[in-house]
Image 1 (cartoon, rainbow, N blue to C red):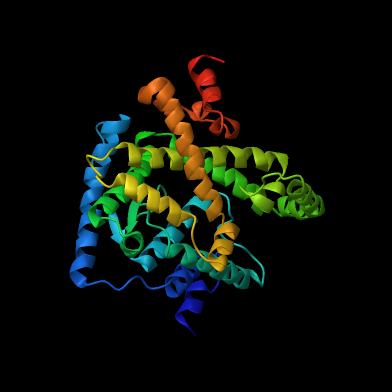
Image 2: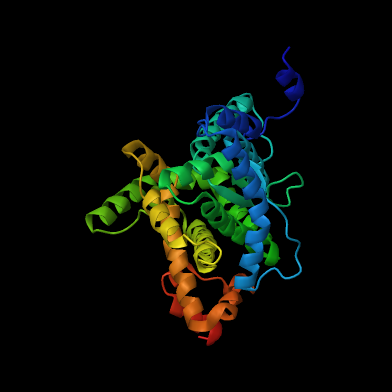
Length: 361
């Protein structure tokens, strides 16, 4: 009898085999670029060290995080990111998804879900430059990761200064870490909202309602396209949501757009004194975000990566206009409570958020 079967004997199978997801993704993710050892070691060392310096700059600009420890990030390769992402996803979705499933086909279904998740992680694993996972790490208390081969690959493709680009990436990811560590309610709020959305979708009745709405959803999508409407930001998944699910989705989309846009604003606003070639990097990086072949763009659209790219621009525009209007301290009112977060409508109407939060209307 195999080791796996001994371990799982007499025990219900997990609804998603996260171990299989991690191993599948780590096996299938493409290898990184081939670079001289000295260059690779420099990139790894700088990424680890620059996270401390970068977060200090972020704190000075934003006014967030006073008194918190300045900690280095963890530098990983592509398989390392895949494994870490699987751990974080397991922790995040564990509040809503059943920890185990019963029935004779439960192990098979869990394995299928694990393999599918692994395929997605393998695709993303060759693209993600870094991330702060509030639910990752050995103690599940948060983990800042920088994916060295992806940072090197992007820097080489864009032909930009290596040190500047590494600092620029660290500024973005350290902003995310500061968002979750300086705003003490944000982690639980985000987890609760995800739990609500995933819980509704995984509920058997919820899934029945979802498929029951499919015919009307397809009609609505066709009407939207015929009328020139823009449903690309969320596509079919959003159209198939119930009213309750859409409310939660709208809050999560607004929050995600805020977090990404705020980080994008900060990484540029820190200024040329820290990243001398910031304008060149931003210009070439924006062009790179829009690139890719037909298959790559199709996969990005299916996985929501293109929607995320739009979030950066929308969130940065919101952040910039609010700061121009009420200053950084006025913008930081966004972190007061869930009630002061921008709504989805306010993301594209920053003055509406300013009126509601700062003018009482």
